[in-house]
Every structure is written in C-alpha cells, then in structure tokens.
Length: 80
Image (tube, rainbow, N blue to C red):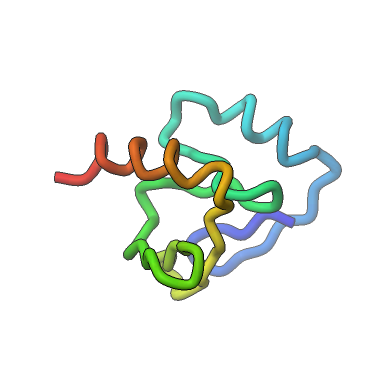
C-alpha cells in the first residue's frame, strides 16, 4: 500500500524495494523494512521509545534501530 501526503492510498504489486530503487536520489529514505518515506514530509523526529518520525499527516512511523544512524545523518543534511 502506498500512502500519499493528502491521504489517498494506492494499492500496488511493486515491492518496497522496487520503489526504494526507483526513488533513490529523490529525498526518500527507507526507515524500516516496511516504511519508505519522503524526508521532506517529516514533521518531527522523536528519539524516545526507540525513535520514530511523525509525518505531516500525523502518522507515527518507527525508525528501525539498524537504520537509525544513517537516517539521522541523512536528515542532518536536509535540516536547516
């Protein structure tokens, strides 16, 4: 399932890995085996409870422990 920022959902047969490959270099990051997000749509990052992002639409998504360091380095580059 693909969730768009305005709330629309799209069902697809492509794998998340396919989307990750296609969106490489376009400000997307795979924060968890089940979540590929647009870094420009992050509202905040909460470090407690293992770490999770809050997206503009209010959805809270866990950032996996394995990907957290790379994620934090990535958002440091885009945060002013």
